[in-house]
Length: 294
Image 1 (spheres, rainbow, N blue to C red):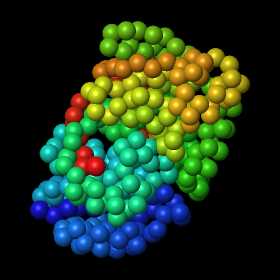
Image 2 (image 1 turned 180 degrees about the vertical axis):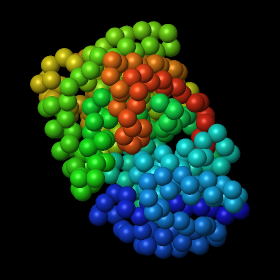
Image 3 (image 1 turned 45 degrees about the horizontal axis):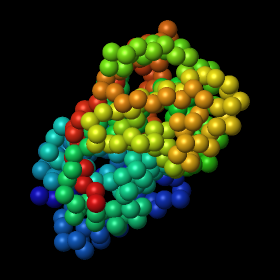
Image 4 (image 1 turned 45 degrees about the vertical axis):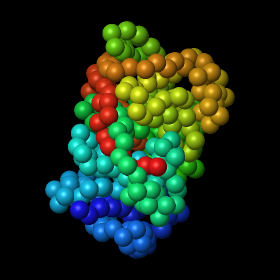
């Protein structure tokens, strides 16, 4: 049975090679490995999921997603709860999941690793009926994700995230939420609520230090509003592993959580912004995705 390699030709912006070069490299790599592969380029948002579904119907034994966390999310959402494993070639703006899993940044090495590795099971999260592999969130990170994905934002990469993030830190209004996690209730005026399967957003920004992708639970991170000035000063803690020392920060494992607000809740799943209702449920799906990494 062949391998399918689904390539997002524009992920990562101009610092990444164009789609045709990625496809040629993928073809050469699988040929050297003595394998056959269908190499497919996405053409629009949501296309990666359609291509993954078609690859599974054709009998693919492995589907490799070459792109950022959004491309990985689309492919993983289609492979979820099946026996067909996922491989990853990181080529996004942040590559949070790939960094956390230790996947080689070199495309040929990442492909070889996926082809040679034995599948292992990892957890998936779900928020608002949308699956996620890495992180989902409500609040300032969802606001940043919406700004980053907006059509008017023509610049990709970490610098763009940083610019939008700094603007949000200075102006984003906190909201009050009722949070019920595994039966334990909290009312919080929060800047951010993160639902972490993995520990980091990407580029080394670790919002949930210690979170594990195969422990059968998610981690709920709540950053309550204290002093916005102090919160801004504490932002570097995201990059040195000490986020837990930010004033108002708390983190706890959970299996299911309900989050309510007086207004509709904007959220993101793996960086993809979504406009939701005023109440959302999140849950973990233990071992729901098979993945090939060394």
